[in-house]
Length: 96
Image (cartoon, rainbow, N blue to C red):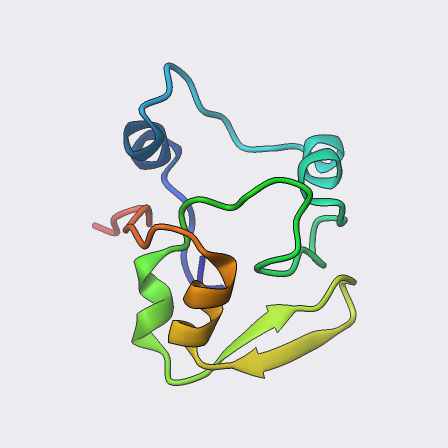
């Protein structure tokens, strides 16, 4: 998800076909990705990321976390999405 957006958990639930979805806490994030909140890179997780946000394509360059909350790296959004291997969807909260 791009930094100026928030994830709409209901839209994620619908995309995944899940019965229930909630925001992940710090322990679950570390358990499923292998990284702490704030440092989760877009790929290289313990489990597969399935839904990169379509809003990434609104930017010519995105800065992604590189495994720590203090390290980032730039890349173009299409490369990020390809490397993550996810399905591109729009799960942003809609603004009024």
